[in-house]
Length: 166
DNA sequence: GCCAACGTTGGC
DNA sequence: GCCAACGTTGGC
Image (cartoon, rainbow, N blue to C red; front, side, top):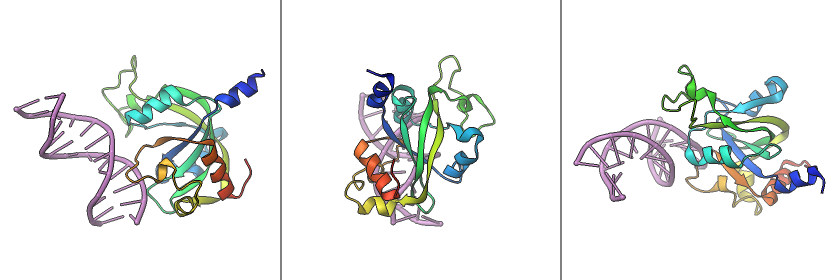
């Protein structure tokens, strides 16, 4: 079995949320090599995903929260798996956490690279109106988790709604 | 800007 | 170990 097909078998799909005023898909598009660390996650369930489950090659939907229009603006790929979130050690960072010990880091991040910025965002309203996406975790009431697993069917449906083939 | 839902903290 | 108080998230 070829290594590439092993990777594909194990590849997972995710949705990462961000407030665009803090970090938007355009910030990522303008970053060097269109690659950036996904930092500042300070929730244990999301941390566990980043530390234990998100792997190089995994595909990620980029979701803008809080500011209209809400929705998915494109996709990313993981290029570096979980490592210590250095912003936790920086007292000038808004993500500083004095209780995170560099020798035993509490918070983790991954590196992402831009794959596609959708020609038009797949808005929350579109996700709500489509049978294949209305049940996504991100659509559930009270769901605040910023790192969420996505099924392959949901991944495909989002790309169909975006009007692009994967 | 409001506020429901949620996660975390800390007194007991 | 419970749970009230608090701070944050994020849709509306």
